[in-house]
Length: 147
Image 1 (cartoon, one colour):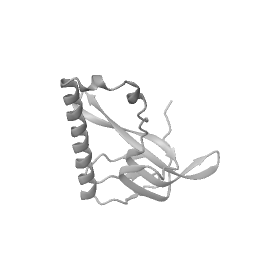
Image 2 (cartoon, rainbow, N blue to C red; image 1 turned 90 degrees about the vertical axis):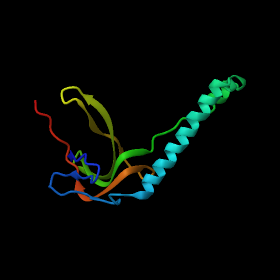
Image 3 (cartoon, rainbow, N blue to C red; image 1 turned 60 degrees about the vertical axis):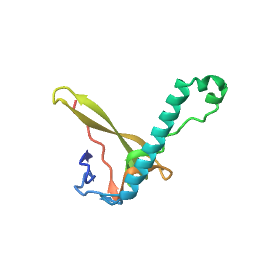
Image 4 (cartoon, helix red, strand yellow; image 1 turned 180 degrees about the vertical axis):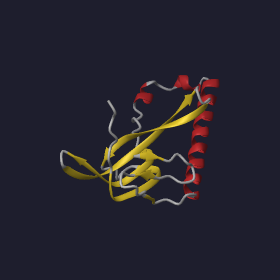
């Protein structure tokens, strides 16, 4: 499997040479608006935190309230690939793949690069992705390691 890291179009190339078709519009304005709303909420949360620290308001709150906040679970991936056929022990399974990336600085090229990895596999019907691909009737073949 190879990844195309272009921001305009995303594709996964499978063993048979076919590319899965994107289910989302290349320029999804609703996603841009959602991201802007999330940025706004993050900014307001940071602003409120700084105000609370500057005015010592946090000292009047019991620390137990902080530990009552539920943990966030990650149900969002960079690329959600649906309906992938994966074979294990001669049995084929229909699964979804959650693919996430991290940015690392490459000192040889003097730039940041994206490293993609499969972050989750299975029934990801409750997950969301920045981009979504339907891999219907395509089979995932994991690469072999040269030894």
